[in-house]
Image (cartoon, rainbow, N blue to C red):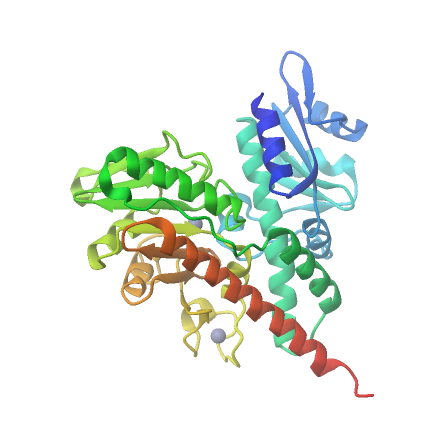
Length: 385
Ligand SMILES: [Zn+2]
Ligand SMILES: [Zn+2]
């Protein structure tokens, strides 16, 4: 199976796409995943990009993207969008795709789908496309949730319909039983990490390229590499000494510093980090009457939670609001902590079972809270009979 087919299958198996087509321009042009429209072929020709990916999102993503794109280019304030996309340009016209792709990594064509161009090939195009799916989804649901809270609801009916569809297709609470007694050997740690990563992706708690996972044993931290897929961790795990000075951390996850600090100040030995969609959405909308609206990630007047998972800011860099300074202290008293607009970190004592359960529980709580915000706004605005 080619890499192209592999990523097409991922998009379809994870129910993210109805259709996914790669157009690859080398000496000759090859198409994978079905027919490419004439417009797509023309765009590929004009761009001379090595690899073009077209994705028609499955529901509820397609409608969420259409709604997110209503006013044109969009950019929710979540970390995936900020890191990978900046903004997602929107057009009605395929002829504008090449110029949009010259300035951005991906473009959304209304009523058609997502197109990304990737000079480094299949995997990169897949990452960009799944970031757009995440971005549009987060944008639509966080805007609708916030509007409902502010008693200025819009699209509540659509949001509820898409929400039900999402629950039906994506939400599962039947947890697999993961390996126990994982600290026996290097091999048992590595295979437990691979198993937990796969389960996290299969449960829909993260798109495969995001998130990270680690185990601490003795003086070593076993951690997934940056850019690795959580559902394919075999051979993708670095071993770094807990002693800071000794690890270069070149390939280790960019979040190694946070993991290391958590191991320093807690007695937990396992960390799981994912981007569950509604935990991210709920972290971004403040359900309180808050005078600091817009600054709730660091200046909220209420201590906020997703379920029982406290929300902390997590900016990049080393400042006081940087994740490495906010997340570890919060994990001292909580086994699940949500980083604003980013994702959830969970820990457990010695295997991944508790960490995975906590991750699922946090997301389930987020889904319930979100739904009740929409339902409450619906009853309060419905005119009395
Ligand atoms: Zn993350
Ligand atoms: Zn607030």
